[in-house]
Length: 443
Image (cartoon, rainbow, N blue to C red; front, side):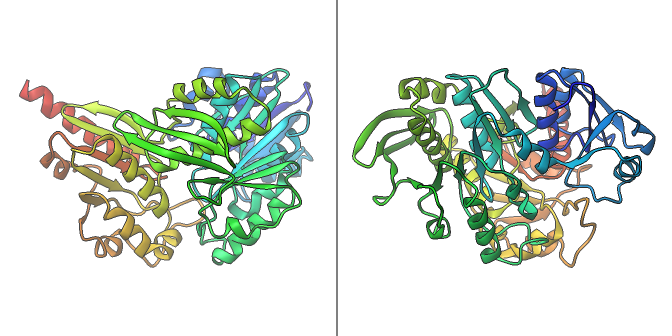
């Protein structure tokens, strides 16, 4: 690290990039970056920190910069090309993060889904008991002086997590995703198998995942879950409208009774992984109980608000397994209410590869609406549409437009869950405005 340079982030609004920028800023380094003008949910933290965000422009690149390039942008990006032409140091996001991990007890969180929620929970809990730096994939990052722990999200996309050699790694699941890169589930499994060889002290893996059970590593693998063959078990689980509670055992040792104000089975499992890490780091488990109880969640994961008589939930879910988990959580908290799903498919390749699975998960709602497919930087079009997905859904499947959200006005005292990794919040905002105006007129 260099106090004399300015760390310049190309794509600073990216979820991991903004988190990393905040960490460096907290540690006293000079930070700025560039991105698109469009507002993103990650930029509020950058604004609050006073970090300068410029529009993309190759003229931003000047002497004295150390460039950190977001993985969404190719080497043909004008700013990256200019930086290389000038001979400036240019490092990819995952490579830079990998170099930062030494000097801490580092804990990575990997998995096709559940990374951000688990990283957020682990960061919150450990920060309450010891100095902790963390990088969460919701745009949240914190650099803490003399930190004992460094908690970070380890993304499997394009095998980027191979840049990391953490002390511990939590693996929430191995599932097929990113079909623009991975050829199938075996390819994903081999990526996790490879990264497991780089973990230094121990791996904590979900016991019900058949592919995680296949892993071979040079360090112990501790499985967590609800099964009798799991090393860490949640037993006597009670799920109510106030959250969940459960007993935890390591083998036959009782580790205590825990409560969380979180919903869905996945949050019980995430909590179990956090407890397992704390146990091996000899953290006082009574302190862990208090911190778990106090956790409120991360950005864009089951974020709730009330407008008129409706409950609106915003969630980043963009994979069938995530949709299932989010709807499960909604059912737990609102068992008596109608659940309406509004889903924005994210990328053409994912939609076509997982079409039937998407339909199956979405049908867990009482009614389903879709938006048009959100394309990505890497993928502008494809041979599938939201209408193709809608045709497979037996709980609706009508396609909404942001300028006409009136079909949702048919519901009262219900729950609307907006899900997606693109700009689904645009539709949500339009609906909220419609609902607020209607409510105002009725008053």
